[in-house]
Image (cartoon, rainbow, N blue to C red):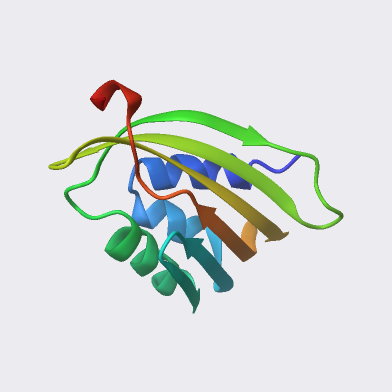
Length: 125
């Protein structure tokens, strides 16, 4: 079973651009969907720019990686789901992302992600 998906979730939770770059191929084909927009790019720099330049801002603190779940592959496509506890100036939030990916050796070459968006934490009431 591939550990690429869980390692990607950990790298995103750590906001570790170098680790994300190390996990994806030089020509990774990325597409993502957030509540208000579709995103796409090719290559590690484009992926990192979307993740840490648009999806998560510097002021967004990832307080915890709450859950990481993998599922049975759909033929050559693997899946990882992960949930993050977040905090920024607007309060506490939870976000969940689903990623479908294909491995090219020891790296991700194809990546599709879906994000729930930042949802207000129930503790924030």
